[in-house]
Image (cartoon, rainbow, N blue to C red; front, top):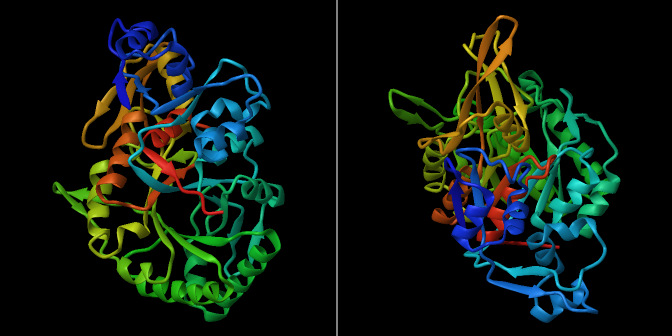
Length: 429
């Protein structure tokens, strides 16, 4: 696999000729919205399958899978265009496999109301799906927002393990530290919470929980570890999986990256997996900054792997962008989130040139918004193929268990192209 950054004068045909890959495959692998009007600085993924097959008369997807001793899920994830049609076409080329390096797990996050087409296209790429559908109240009761029964049935059909997300966050991501501490400090409320989610899992068909630790730090870690131990004891009795997602927020002070000295070793003793994911939501009130920073995340993973076995660690990928108006005014300014395709649409519309920040390994661009008799400058930070590949390299270098994805509500072909060109996806059911 190669990542090519579009330069002045490039076009889809020159890139195709350079790599000996068809225009159609480049468009499909990257889901290019404007294939004949590429953006300077845009990252394009070029893949080279290990094995392909030309469909013959009478072939079915199952017969091809059997012939090559691969799973249907592998064929579907390597050929995403098959997800929304029932038939194969004689003469079309299917990708059987890539030159992958190893197998990993993947854990997506989603709300139950995601589009069925997006879900079906994504599921062959997932080991787990963490379903955001419940908020825990201060007394340990759980509020449901949607009926996820059909979603869970579809997950099982596609061999994806459903995990119930346990959190005090609102569906919009609003933190509730008071409720979190009410539960952490009250054994009765903890018991209520545990009984509630176990009943939900039994009734709905979940295979485990994913507990979101949004406020974990050095000062409150004992409270969290005690709660986690209590949950773990019950889940082991009931034979359910237990994941924890930690909202990390590492910072740099005086050129030094500050790592919270949390006892991840103790936490890992009670869970199946630890996911490190920096949650981002629809609106961002923080100053303009990279969506993620590989330098900070590498420092964190270096610390965590000194305490925890790497095969218990998953790192999250954030698939979105933010658009800030400048200058940034504290307590007043905010950024709206954009899908990656929307970011590229915007860059194309305003004629932007995409730059790249080496420290964070994330792209950005500036543009001017025309107002009445004035211009307002904007900066857009987002994630591209280079950012995703850098995170894949972190997984590879530290032999981590796999990758989390926040979130899968909008399908991003480039993400899955990169993951599948590097890794085989583990299916456990």
